Image (tube, rainbow, N blue to C red; front, top):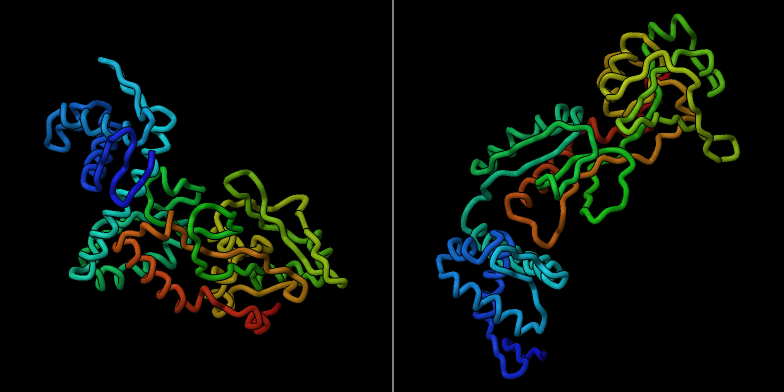
Length: 331
């Protein structure tokens, strides 16, 4: 098989660009519908035309894309590979149409977002009124879910996630660093004293976090030689699974908690929380990111939401508190 401009040739078989697109559409619809009849109804043509298009595509490619009998139809391994690439090509065509249309009309349609409960409540929700005012033709569906979701298979357009973000095929746009610190209420510190070294924590009540996978949050400290040492509480007074609950427990005087600075910041300013061991505690390497499946085939509605949220979050002072400001709130 050779490719010449818009013509595939093999043993005298030719297929120009128009025929090729028609054949690819037929093949994709057959794969989706499970039969030539279903594809024909979808495309508004006869079953014979669909069968002819698929057969012509197979001859032009020189491979069989599907095995069919009078009762069954199953893609070959080559068919599975070709279907995946064909979907990308068709998505690109849809994007081209959407991009041109977006130049004439406002972004419209539904955008599905997955976010953690705390970030969704405190940062995403306040951003929605401005988003929908700027783009009134948009609709937004938000799931508040702290589990690790499968963005593509579960049908989300984008996700807002925090922590140690693993490398993946997803595009990740950093919103902010999530600096951690140790906090306790003045009432607790008045009863139990202020720890001066990490070793002092063994005599204190610890509020620890357990993640949904069963692991526990580790506390890290800088040693005199610059190395990082990990403190793992032997026993926690309270163990909780959400960062906002840890903050609340610290406010209630239940012990010392490690939480994100953005969670504690309003309570520091109000004087209801104090920072401890700030001189040696390591803030971690956590971050909050906005993730989406791919950059090349981004629909205008999704692109508009991403750009708006990144703009709003960049101006959210709670998300960008410099660590040096914690010095004003030491116990």
